[in-house]
Image (cartoon, rainbow, N blue to C red; front, top):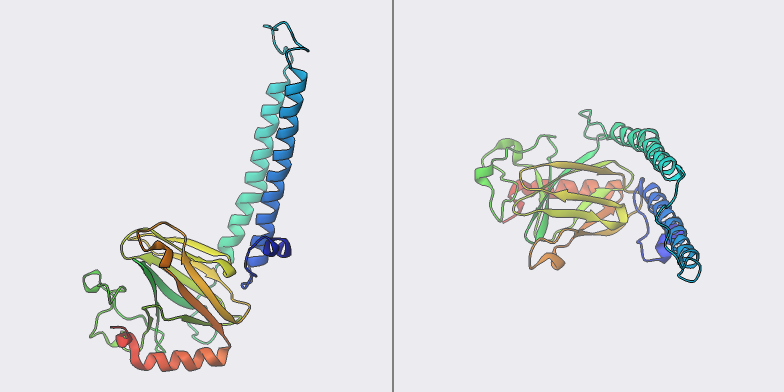
Length: 260
């Protein structure tokens, strides 16, 4: 399915779960195609079967069988099977697969706070001390979207990416993005990673993935959020583990004061 979708304009997949998403999208469109052909065929059959020349006189009695009732029951049964047999187990599996943070900075998933604001994305990583800097709503501003408290010792080595600077991640390592918004509803979308999650003011919503290919991948906003919506872009740059560690160490030197 992935190759077919790429020919139709979908970017090449770059995360561990992307092929499964592509298969799902392909099967849904295949089902829609089958339904379209089926209903079109029924429509054409009805045009021929019930044309005026074939039925010059109206039949006010109609169908006397219980076929329509049986069909409705059959549809309800199929929908119940899809929900209980497929949707619920798949959702349970997705929840169980959420990366676990065990307290080891070398093997734990990399956590990145992502915040949207008109019209840019900003990122915040905990520093090498593995502690998040203190955050307060009262401290939040256009240049400090995360509300980081300036004199907090735990935040001195935090890594902040803002003003269009790419967020960097190592290839092959789980990532948890904790997504929120500073102003209106945005939608954090990385097409190549097959990740889309609304950014809602007052809420922090996690999304996770594992990058599988190095390169630079575009972040867009998938929710109309104002006059600058079309230019609300950013980049996730997936690099080798060594390149990530070097970048992370350098950024940590400037700490949370690295944005102005």
